[in-house]
Image (cartoon, rainbow, N blue to C red):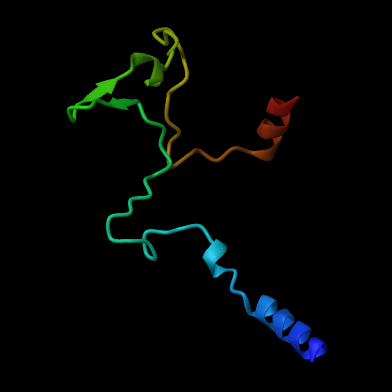
Length: 92
């Protein structure tokens, strides 16, 4: 009898589904579940329903002055063909 009990417990542990340990997705969640898009918040909610934006949490992009820069910002979709001799000389 004890052997049968132990084997029965073993079978129960083997049958345990690991799906319950998966990450919760909106498809299998309650109706009001919102997962979000993995973005960092830029502020916080107030008690009265407002939202305060914190300037330190906003992205700050530093762009250099490119007035006399000779390269173009975009690459052409139809580039000119370069010969092998020219490209080998440019890499040295």
